[in-house]
Image (cartoon, rainbow, N blue to C red; front, side, top):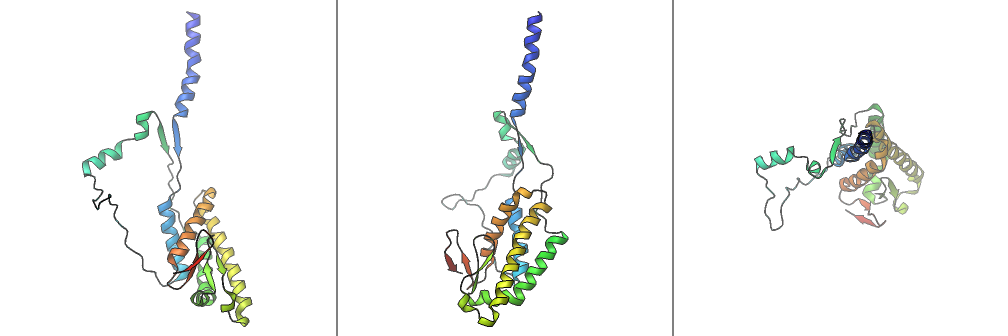
Length: 212
């Protein structure tokens, strides 16, 4: 009897470990919210609202709409599919919305917008500047900048890039996930390119420049 009791209680820690191993903590990077925040920020810096294509509805191959009847959607939303294979999912209670509404972020945005309008825009129009593939801007053709303006333009580019890097960090910290900084930067990199106006230059992932 004593041997049986000991075996039973020895199994409790093992069961507890197994149960813990079946629970995953799902702290995800909110890509859609980050993209919308980046679009809002970039458009305010660049000015002149860009025309954006309306979102496409998901379609199945062959042109069939990927429609799911409402009762089935409701049922699917209530099912924890991972639990069916023995894996529970714990979701973070504080799901961030990638806020931009902090004094530090808004101050950076204001500086970048002012600098872009006063100094940088005309040199994007001329092709001297372009959006690089790392979330910054580059002097891609210095010959297009009049000699008397080059020092001022180079200084403005350096300050704009310093502010850009600061805002990527500030957004991640403001949303309590500093580890998201590189992901925030990648989202902004794509958005600068997406928001570039016709005739401006952007750099692709391979380092090649193309004109929109």
